[in-house]
Structures are given as C-alpha cells and as structure tokens.
Length: 125
Image 1 (cartoon, rainbow, N blue to C red):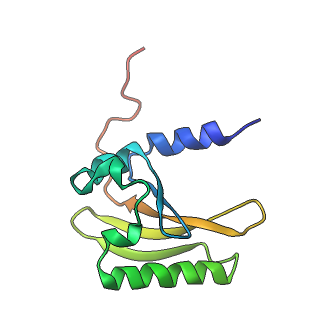
Image 2: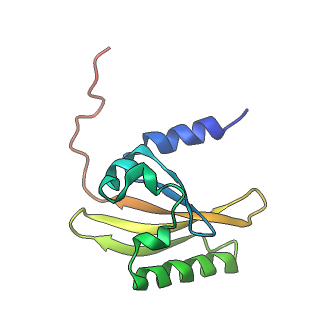
C-alpha cells in the first residue's frame, strides 16, 4: 500500500502551520495553514526560498545548531524551542529522516495548549 497520499492528506488537513525544509534550509513544502499564516511574508512564494532569510541572526544560529545536533545521532529527533504566550503554544523543531535513519530535513511543530471550543461530533448526516 502506498502511504504517501495518506501522509500528504494528514499534513494538508492539519490546522497548524507545517513548513518542511531541506538540509540546505530551503523551504520545500508549506501546508495550506502555513501558506495562510505566512501570507503577509509571501505565503506560497516562500517555497523555494531559504528559511534562514526569514529569521533574525540569533534564530539562524540556533536553527543551524539544532540541525547539527540532529545530525549527531539518530536518537536526536525533537527539541523544544519556545513557548508563545500570545497563542498559548509550544514550538519544537523535528528531524526528518529517510528509511535508513539518515537526516534529510526538518520542520517546525506547533502544539497549541488551548482546549477545543467546538462541540464534539458536531455534524449532521
């Protein structure tokens, strides 16, 4: 069974922004939530650009250090980077690896801490 369509659908439907980068820090994918979130900075036009151009020097230094740490061990896969009080979320950098465990890229993961306000199973059939 080919899983790539399933994985792509998971990412496409995620409410959180997902920006995937190569080891050269090139933005290679943005899900619809990321395109909308970063619209004022170019949105979809950011694909193919360097993620490093979107950050301040101190952040660029930390991104590079984290990628170096990811490369040091197959066990180094997720690191907490910050908490955003305004949006009540924690932010992590996550390593992306191929089937053999080689580092192939990374992405930033947002975990919101606010409770869902929608009603459970609120739909009509």
